[in-house]
Length: 118
Image 1 (cartoon, rainbow, N blue to C red):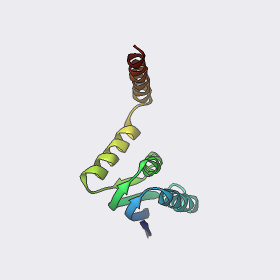
Image 2: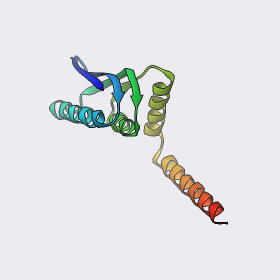
Image 3: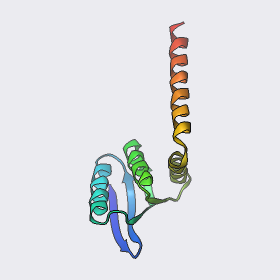
Image 4: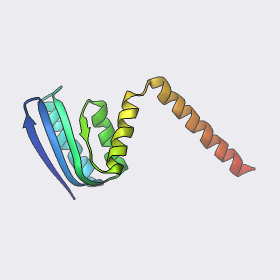
């Protein structure tokens, strides 16, 4: 279950989430977020995740999309803070570094595949 609250602030909007950002709730939140973006394009967005207890892979992808679009992500707890820091690192990383990482990941996968064949 996910509880979503939206507040209009002087500088934009603030989402407050409670519960699990997972499964069908990710798509529901994505729809709400996209509707708000259409109504007020370019407005500052803050997403308060301090009461979120679990984020699955689809939730992580949505938060990454939001971070890329300029949303401010606010978290509490070691796991969620780490996730947000990772998303920030990805956002601020250069395209070259991201491509290098992808290449190295591909090399590691290939090396592991070769090891299994021998």
